[in-house]
Length: 268
Image (cartoon, rainbow, N blue to C red):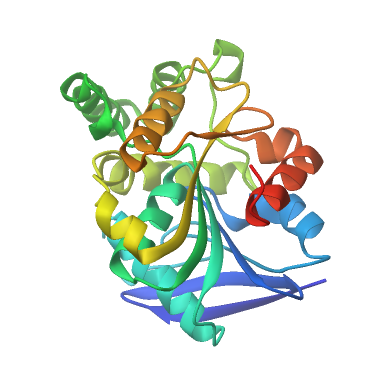
């Protein structure tokens, strides 16, 4: 059973859900809406208080100015505001994809608020040796969206990311209308800022009690596998393998939940 709530954030309102009881765990994505984490949250809620949310401008989290860009720093501040609303000094945080970038920014900007930070496949292209080319590709996808629309941009994105052509589509959403709206938000106001974020490794490691980089067992062909390995190298710690690929928590939810439990308990 879950409880839905909203809180005020800078320039808007954030929708979130709380389920379970026990030590606090925040699941965060970007641009994924919180509903995609519900199957994972339900499995973890037997021993954790699990919080899911729609990131700013996505799903039910609305902005006063829909044209405002979403940056990792803004999303980090939203997460800190969420902890404040829950009356929590600290939490474990699992971030996937752009949500992993948000979680890294949270640890850097709000030191001491994160216990264990699990950054699952953050798309940090600036850490790659071919960052200039990666940056140009991301810019091209943004321009494709502006010229040709969301569907064309998603096709380029999925090919660039390394997914099979059969998977060339947007992430699941509550409705086709929601998928288009969230896709437009992603390409128009979010992707570029997320991809270009460069984490302050010293601040991240000082701000979180423990940092774990996660990679999917089936993600070897993906750009996010390379960026995750690059981040782990900077942190001086080996990446930890999780079941499935970039969205393993959707395709192999039980196995993924078991792996996340082990990591949060300190086992790798």
